[in-house]
Length: 301
Image 1 (cartoon, rainbow, N blue to C red):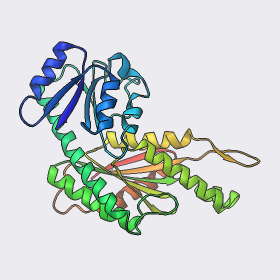
Image 2 (cartoon, rainbow, N blue to C red):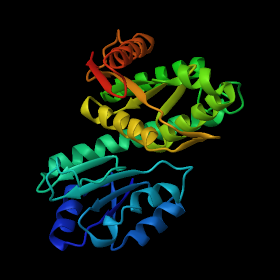
Image 3 (cartoon, helix red, strand yellow):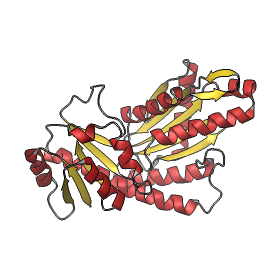
Image 4 (cartoon, rainbow, N blue to C red):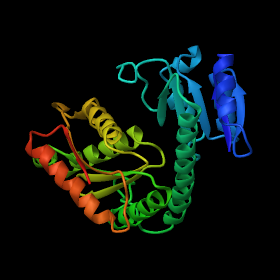
């Protein structure tokens, strides 16, 4: 696998090259974000390790641009940083981040996990192409319908089991959808569903398994994600919807809010099944709504 490394510190670059030496990986040293975009655009590499302190990488649009140049191919972005990982200025949109100084073994573990996730992403892309010829997509949101979601999530579970990766299921529901439908009608309700679905897609990784469960309820299966990281995904979606201006004629913009429930599994056993996990995520979502909505409730399984 070819790995792009954008690291201007020669000592750090040499350390990364040494850590990833061998026949398994080919490390390609680059000096700018534009070089990274060029490699990603050509499809020559789908994995980038970048120093977040590099000047042109700090552009807030860089990660979004990197994902947009070749949307058909999932990419993995691992950032290195000297900053405290709890710092509010920590970038968003990357797949993983590692704080300096780190050990060679830690880096190799992160890279190996990224390799497995990219492999699963490629399998998911193939599966999606196969599904396009079947009636499995919800016509309103373009997400998978419930039956297709269960099949695809089962595949994610099996791949996660074989690769010894964690798995998280997020259930999302619009808190005030019935009130919006009752007041403004189903046409406005459909517009809200389309906008919420678009936000969910934008705030998720391109290869995440997402489906419309029913009505105004959605489910996301996150392979390789556990606990607090799943909460960050749900929080990005909730914040994204909250920050979206939804216009209604002769009325103030709609204030749409979401609740999220997360069921997170660190160790997948032979008896673990997808549908019970989805139901546990939905139960957690109900608890979030009962607590006032517009929030997240997490359970570990």
